Amino acid sequence: MLHVPIKNYEYRRMKEVKIESTLYVFNNLNEVPEDVKKLMDEAIKARIKAYAPYSKFNVGAAILLDNDEIVSGSNQENASYPSGLCAERTAIYYAGAQYPESKMIRMAITASSQNNPTSTPIPPCGACRQAISEYEVKQDTPIEIYFMGETGKVVKSNSLANLMPFAFSKIVL
Ligand code: THU
Image (cartoon, rainbow, N blue to C red):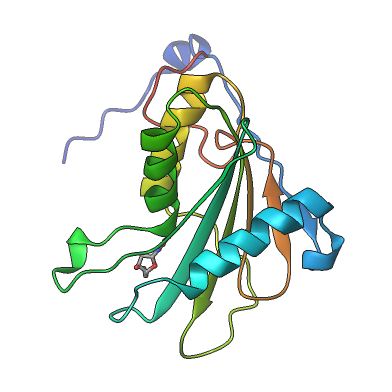
């Protein structure tokens, strides 16, 4: 393959843009604020209802809306594997469909394996980040994301953009 080196003067024309992400970590669910604990409890209830006979990996997500409604969802698998859907998208598409005028304040996510205890925090997959990003851009207000395993640390991100800076959207550099 032909390798064309970038010349020094071309480097000088570039602006360097650094992206930083900050996460906040709580040691366990008892340390998070009461309203977040309430939302995570709804995500746990959803996780227990997950339909995951193939991966044996249950995920639950709950979203607090600005009308005080809580919408939740779990992963829904399918014998044709790619037809299944993650918990986060099940929940967010339901929220978008039922309450198109409401803003989403925060999402809580919890994951557990049916085979062994999951004490590490599980962040949303890239496809779910892209889906959540759509609503964050639409409502022009950050959506807080909290995620955890079955037990253990709870991680907070102040926005979806902080979890995925280069979502497919307009970016200002
Ligand atoms: N899963 C979610 O529900 N959310 C994610 O962010 C990643 C993965 C589900 C999909 C599938 O049912 C199972 O977890 C294993 O990948």
